Length: 159
Image 1: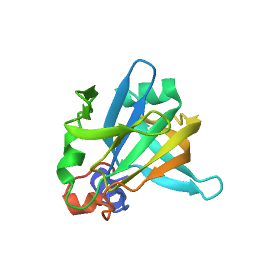
Image 2: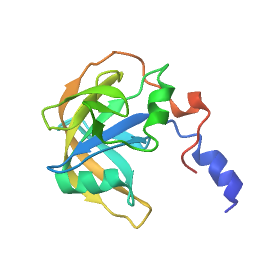
Image 3: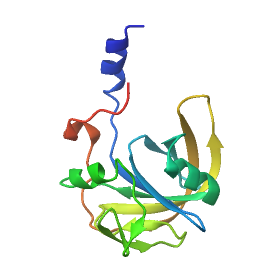
C-alpha cells in the first residue's frame, strides 16, 4: 500500500475535536481526542479511541468512566491546550473553569457541550489505541456552540 496515499485517503474521514476527561479516586486526566462516534441509540452509547500509553487511558481504565467535552467553533485554542493533558489545579483544568458531573468527571464550562459515560467495554484489537464503549449517562449544554471539525483546523491525526 502506498503510505502517502493511505494518509491522504484516511485523513478525509470527518472528525470533531473533543477534550476527554476522567477521574479516579486518586487521579484526574484529560486529553484532546478526535476518534469518537455514536454507536447506539438505546442505550445511548459512543465508541472512543484512546492511546494506550496515555495517562488518560490509565485513568479511564481504573475508573470505568469518562466525559467528553465538545470543542466548539472558535475554540481551537482549547483543543490545542489539551494536547499535553492536564490535571486539576486551583479548581481549573488546563486553565479552564470546570465543574464535576454526576460521574465525578470534570466538565469544562467553556466547552460547546459535554456528556458523561460509564465504560461498558474496552476493546484491545492490537493497535496503538484501545476502543472504549461508553454508555451516555448524563449530558450538559455548556456554551451551545457548533462543534469544531478537525479539517477546519488544518491539523491531522490519522492516516
